[in-house]
Image 1 (cartoon, rainbow, N blue to C red):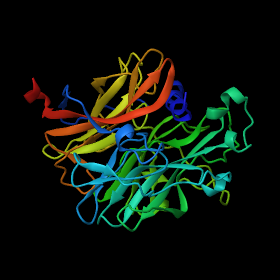
Image 2: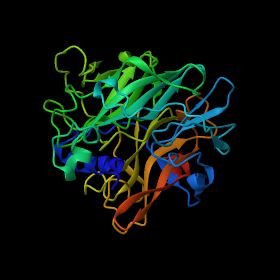
Image 3: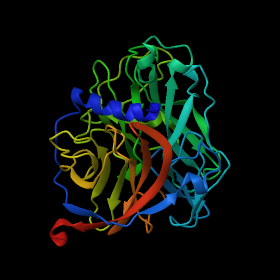
Amino acid sequence: MSPRAREIRAFAMMAAIGAGLPAWADAPRLKLTLADDTQVMFDPKRDACDGHDVPDVNARVFRDADNKLVMFALHDVNRPLRGQDLSHLKLDCKVAFKASFSANPAAYDHQSWIAATWTDNGKDIAAVVHHEFHGDRNGQCDVPKDKAALGCWFNTLIGAVSHDGGATFAKQTPPVIASAPFRQDVEQGRHRGFFNPSNIVAFNGNHYFLSNTTGWAGQRYGACLFRSAEPLKAGTWRAYDGKGFTIRYADPYGPKQPAPAECRPIAPFPVAPGAIVRQRSSGTWIAVVQAWKDDKSYPVPGFYYVTSRDLIAWSEPRLLFATKTLFDNACGAGRLNSYPSLLDEQAQTRNFEDVGEEAWLYYASMRVDGCSHTSDRVLMRRKVTIKPEAAAR
């Protein structure tokens, strides 16, 4: 099993710690229906520049200053797909952002994925970066070898910025958006930190995203909601404490700071959603999330959707696509599907945070070899129709 797959599977085990109580939203009920057709949008065998180019993160899209689309959806050698529309994107072989595998955890330069983007003008692009530090690869691991890949994994969200429409990104200074309040050698034996942010959306004059945390003493496992008025500045993001957005996560390698308050995990997410979009006609927020079977909110493994008016109170989950994901035992699966995102070809916002009556479900489909995940992956999409529940009956 790959390290990224171990991370995903471990979230399922961590869920037993608890991620907050349900708080179903009084939002308009929508019915999402998935069509049977599938389209392969990126196949490494056909489209890659080299072996690094495999789908490994939720698809994120924005329009640049020339009104062309830029998508990030692949691995840690971050290259964009570019084109006139979602149906005609081609990989740009120039690397936009890549970490150096630094052995210094304080450098935040070990391994990085562009996981969320935001731009107001198509030229200046903010990125929330999923940054991994693996102590086991750098002689900084104090757990048994068979548990080291996960047990010495320390994850941080950092900020990066581009001023050339996403052609190149540079890490911000200071870089930390969200971190556990201790260094990578603390609490080894499990993966620690913040992981896999959703896309960034604008709402009531601010910007928001959700991210997973595995928690620590004083912080429950779950999905934390972040807000900023200035997403181009990494240090402006604050997490929701249950009453307001007050929590600033400090760099644990900087000056010692008081322990942060607990962010309130947002129900009913087992992990952060793969995408958040707002339907234009109803004004309702829709989130898609992959989940494992829990015999409660998630009766089968797959992709689910929930709705909200305010990004805090969400509806009860409804199944969109029953499928094994990276959360599930791979044995005999043949293929797994993960990293869902919703994108509308006719989006009216520069950052594709809105949808109409139809959208595309994008996701990575990966081959399983026996019980092992492989890098044989393709980026797929399927049409989704979105209707008021009464009209869908």
